[in-house]
Length: 187
Image 1: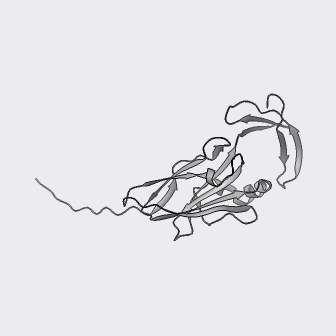
Image 2: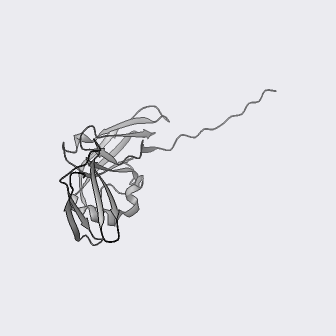
Image 3: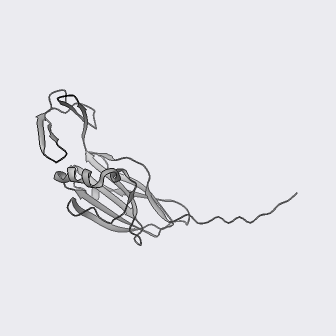
């Protein structure tokens, strides 16, 4: 027999998020991050740079939250680095339909400049949002700790070839230099 029922479908919660989990961007090539927004007219973006000499403090201060999808402040802490770009984007689009956002970081990061950056996307009306920490580099490291030594290999992320002549510094948990060395022909 025929049956009719009225079903209420609530609107999707306003949200903005990154489309993937990647953290590494090659030093050469495109530096584009993909994100999506739903039911937001505007999205605010922050791009923060961490100064290279503050990497240790970043790891000590942010701990596991470096891998969190959520950010809870507008900018990173002032003693770690600075905001290099802040902008509000008009999103628009159909209601309840995800709208793609393509963020070209080449507009804000000088060509050939490596480093660690945090990109935060959020509703301008709120203090929390979606974050992605990214490292722009061409170097990949593998480290193995032995009883009395540490072995480090350095390879190019673009070609996977060893990178000879790279200075490697081993730091203690108190940010003190424990050892330094240079990679050989095998990286």
